[in-house]
Amino acid sequence: MITTHPYFIVCICVFLNVASQLLLKMGINSIGHFEINADNLVTVGLKAAVNPNIIIGLFLFGLSFILWLVVLSRMEVSLAYPLLSMGYIITPFMSYFLLNETFSLSRILGICVIIVGVYIVSRS
Image (cartoon, rainbow, N blue to C red):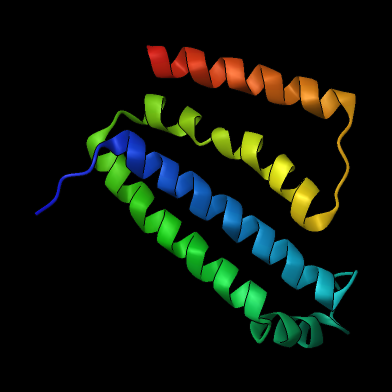
C-alpha cells in the first residue's frame, strides 16, 4: 500500500475542485442565464443533468470530496481547511485563460492576501 503525504492529497483536492468549478461554469454557460421558478425548474434541471461538462464537473467534485475525507483522517481540520483556499488563487487565473473572465486590481490584491494567509497557516 502506498502512503501519500496529506499535503499532496490536499493539492489534488484543490485541483479537482478547481477543474470541477470550471467545468460546471462551462456547462451552465452553454445552458444560459435562467431564473429559478416553477415554470423552468424541470427544463433547466434536465438540461443540466445531461450536460457533459456538468456531469464531469460533479464527478470531479465527488472525487475531491472522497479525497478530502482522506485528508481529514490525516490532518487537523484547522490546518487542512485553510489550505483549500489555494483554489481561490488558482481559479481566477484558470477562468481568465479558459473562460475569458476579467481581472481587477481588487481581485489581484485579494489573491495576494490569500497567498500570504495560506503561507502563514501552512507554516504553523
